[in-house]
Amino acid sequence: MDRTALRDELLAEARARGFSGAGIASVRPFRRIRARALAAIAEGRMATMTWYSPERVEASTDLSRRHPWARSLLALAWPYPPASVPGAPAPPAAPGRPRGRFAAYACLTGPGGGAVDYHDHLAAACDGLVEWLRERAGPVRAHRFVDHGWAIDRAVAERAGLGFAGKNACLLTREAGSYVLLAEVLLSLPLPSSAPSRRGCGNCHACLPACPTGAITAPGVIDSRRCISYLTIEHRGAIPVEMRPLIGTWAFGCDLCQEACPVNSRLAPGGLDPGGPGTAGGPVPHPDLVDCLELDEEEFRRRFRRTAVWRTGRAGLARNAAIALGNAGDRGALPPLRRAADGDPDPVVREAAAWAITRLESV
Ligand code: B12
Ligand code: SF4
Ligand code: SF4
Image 1: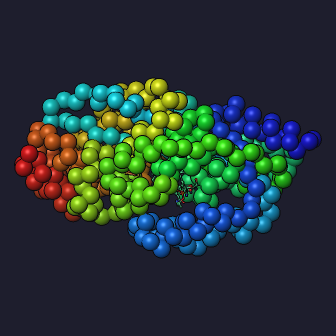
Image 2: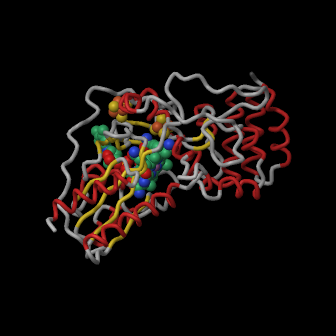
Image 3: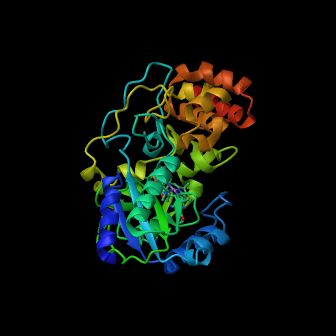
């Protein structure tokens, strides 16, 4: 079969299976992003994420080192709805039970409506697509990357024409803006490359002032040490005191630089249903912060084991909730904070709760 026709059929099949974007990139090294990623590590912008090592960057930016059989790269984007629409009022909260925020990607639901971890969800979708390709094209060797794989997902997607790199560093796609999760599959089959996107941010710079912590230090450059997403998901131990008031009520991740983006608001007129504040069925966009503070290990596992929130751990979520409660300004949250400051098994949570109490008592 003609390779261009096969590529086009494969990309159409990806869309039919729920991916919002699909494209083919060459496997040649990613030299520009290699230099940027190494600089991010050398300048400390990757904070304590030591797993993001120079060795990983070298392998991620020259995929043929570990996979010499690879002849093309299939890049894929999976869409998800934003958690809220800019300007929309926050959902009501009961006195003493302020609501916080979870990043929209953590609230991803599967076909049955239940919460899912996007890694599992995307991996299954990629595998299904590779099976389809094998049925069409015969034996094809494949290796997939989903987020924690050794590939730089945004750079691959950009080269495959899925979209362009925004000043908030996110990959902005035509179909779903930046509200996409990325994955890619190395193939032993040579397929012709897709055309890169010719769009860009132009004169817009709305995301830079929208970041409350100044984490976007230059267009396309994120200092993780200041990024709420890093602080609430990846950072272990106490969150630096000077950053705490800037985190607002985010309890897991942050979407502010995406919510400010006109490309997203043009494409996504509706947000996720805010639903109730309870997390009994898994992550929700506006969770009850006292609930997040008080979960024990068993309940945390039951609610979040197969979701993105699992990464932060019970103590990480409770630490974040304590800080968010301090920032929410509702003194009705003082009793649960006092209980956590005295009795939480984790010293980091106890200290965060004590900080929140001091902050609320000074309101
Ligand atoms: C480490 C990491 C983080 C770190 C560091 C973020 C960062 N920007 O480097 C932290 C924990 C802070 C983080 C946060 C988030 N992350 Co993250 N993260 C990663 C990870 C594992 C590696 C990223 C990386 O290599 N960074 C190093 C830099 C050099 O690479 P980059 O940012 O990817 O590169 C782009 C920009 O630098 C930009 N760029 C480079 N130069 C220039 C110059 C100009 C002028 C411009 C305009 C742009 C530009 O172009 C590059 C290619 O597109 C990837 C998964 C993966 N394996 O790739 C997910 C990934 C990037 N994260 C993702 C998501 C969803 C997020 C959050 C939105 C989660 C949230 N809601 O809380 C935030 C967004 C923060 C932000 N504005 O970037 C998605 C991004 C999807 C998308 N549409 O872009 C990814 C791809 C995971 C996935 N598989 O879907 N993340
Ligand atoms: S995710 Fe939040 S803190 Fe991080 S760069 Fe975007 S707006 Fe700033
Ligand atoms: S807000 Fe503007 S500058 Fe920032 S990513 Fe969106 S289009 Fe680009």
